[in-house]
Image (cartoon, rainbow, N blue to C red; front, side, top):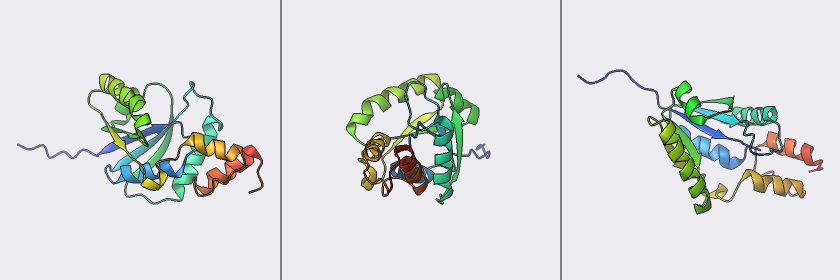
Length: 171
């Protein structure tokens, strides 16, 4: 007898998102084509020294998502600790990770293997952003903004405004 119980395809997209870029939004859109629910998990990540506070990063993600429409239910949460624990807690079936270039692969591959060891029931799904955002990273955006370059086409409006305020530009 076939199992008639329907399982919701639920994924988690974790990251520091310091700040959220149009590349991140592209990955969210692509993930929504594969999953019914997507949780964007903003990580405290004490190993990094983010430009934006934890609360600012959550607010920027929420405001950036509010302006979009996706084909799945998307929610933003904060988290710290092991991703494998969060995956089990939320009953996710997949972890979404972005790959821009071969240079991303080694780190992401190691993380995927560790997550598989800690949560065997969860798959890591690697997605690439739209071709127009392959070069884009939060680090590049911060560097451009710090040097008074225009990041308007690289990030959502709320993020541009927040970067302008951080770096006191008049653009």
